[in-house]
Amino acid sequence: MADDTSIFIGASRKPDDSYQRAEELLLRYGNRHGLITGATGTGKTVSLQVLAEGFSNAGVPVFCADIKGDLSGIAMMGEAKDFLVKRAGQVKLDPYQFQEFPVIFWDLFGEQGHPIRATISEMGPLLMSRLMNLTEAQEGVMNIAFRIADEEGLLLLDLKDLQALLANMADRADQLSARYGNVTKPSVGAIQRTLLVLESQGAANFFGEPALRIADLMRTTRDGRGAVSVLAADKLMMNPRLYATFLLWLMSELFEELPEVGDLERPKLVFFFDEAHLLFEDAPKVLIDRVEQVVRLIRSKGVGVFFVTQNPLDIPEKVLAQLGNRVQHALRAYTPREQQAVRTAAETFRPNPDFDCATAITQLATGEALVSMLEDKGVPAMVQRTLIRPPSSRLGPITPDERRKIIAESPAAGQYDQAVDRESAFEMLQKKTKEAQDAEAQAQQAGSGGSRWTIPGFDDVLGTSGRRSSNRQTVAEAAIKSVVRSVGSSVGRAIVRGILGSLARGR
Image 1 (cartoon, rainbow, N blue to C red):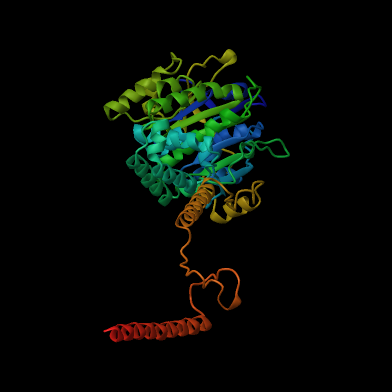
Image 2 (image 1 turned 45 degrees about the vertical axis):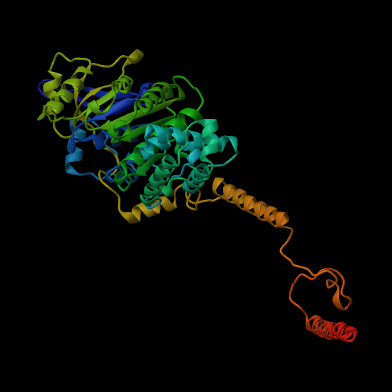
């Protein structure tokens, strides 16, 4: 039976279906990563729940995505149902104790948990390009945008910051092309249209501040149990690319922030990535290489990663080779691809002479799995046909009222609820644009010499000093000018008459 150095998973069976031995995951190999696979309805979620409970009781924080809402039950104490008690007896789980676990609910949309945010800068050009499914040329423009932001001190925090920067780049495309390479307005426009689509899909809620602090995923309780961070992903799955990008970002942040610790007695944190095929679906090679590198190296940071998916073929071979702890639930083999998946899964296990692995995979009952964990010296154990133990927490989802109560009492309550919009690229570029417009207006006014028309000798009419700010005549000015015009006309007529008279007398 499991102790403080291992997690009890279930009991393996002999060929006659009698009890054989307890199957355990050694905590010191929890950072060697793992894989949980199986068709829909075969028990993957329960296996995930059992492992999450075990890590939490061992003081290891856990992060997992809740795709269907079933995993939320880990926050509530389980109930003694007949089939659970029967399974506990079959695997010799005595005593079978019920327990609730310390859970923190998270939600990218802020509806079923604390909001999770990341800044555009933290996401980086590679993941942003992946999220937006950009072409190679558009990805080049995105890389230039991040380079310009760094050089010009522009903070990229939310979507409007990136939109403002792209608009600024379009205005000076010729200038930028000469320095960084081809920056075309059509490419910039295509990126801007994609950003609008992301905004309409709710991605704007994810980008911004306050950004998630990795430390909040690594909490432990006063009694020494690890917090279980549960990401509500039922709505998030409507945008699978955002879900996959978020998980990749989170794994990259862990890799960059956590120090090297080597092999520990137990992991510092364990991640369960459900629907793992979305991480690699249509992903470019450079991204798959990045994931493989992070999975390979994050072990030395004390972090374990477990991929949960329906088909082992969903995981690239380079990544699959890094996963030492395996739980294989039943697979169906009706199509050629499914038959290939069964063969692939069977070949990855250390063979057991008591049964044919490929045949067993197609015959496993619900809640039964082929299990192979790392033994001493990190060697994979011989695969065993195993009944998975029942969970100690509730099997199934919690109610909305229970969720609200847990969120209100969470240690993260109030820290992420309100978005913060500080001065960043959007405001800085707006300020630069206004300053440029003001400078241009002043230059135009100085070049024209002013717009006021003046008449020499009439600038200080009635003893006033200095130029008036208006060209409109006062009543006094109008009267004087009228008299001058009248006098001038009379004098003129007298002069004309005198000249004509002189000419007449001369005849």
